[in-house]
Image (tube, rainbow, N blue to C red; front, side, top):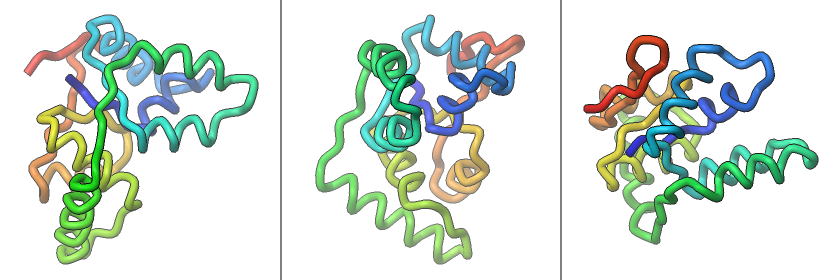
Amino acid sequence: MVLVDTSAWIEFFRRDGDPAVKLAMKALIEELEATLCGPVEMEFLGGALPHERPRIQNRFDILPYLKNDQKIWREAATNYAILRGKGITLPWNDAIIASLALRNDCRTYAVDRHFKAMEKHLGLRLYKPSYNGNFQPE
């Protein structure tokens, strides 16, 4: 499974979004590999225009969902502190998303620079699509 970050969903739904991201997202969805979590859903739907929300929610309703509990918040806090100790500051929401991916042994698809730092310092596995955006198994 690949946990898709808000940054990739934005490109996917944006009319003039990055074509490479759109192709990669299409492949992840068609291969039933894209997964969702609460922080991404809240972040993305919270910023969506009211008339777009039903279409987006319909798309999200068919995706597997990574649940979280109190422990994930503690893991995210630890990961956030590790990064801050290395001089890296990032949005706390990104630390939660990465922590969910780490706990569930998922790769993460993001077009947000913060995830590159988490790959290096936390061992987060980033998803990299293959040629033409096709799904890239591990």
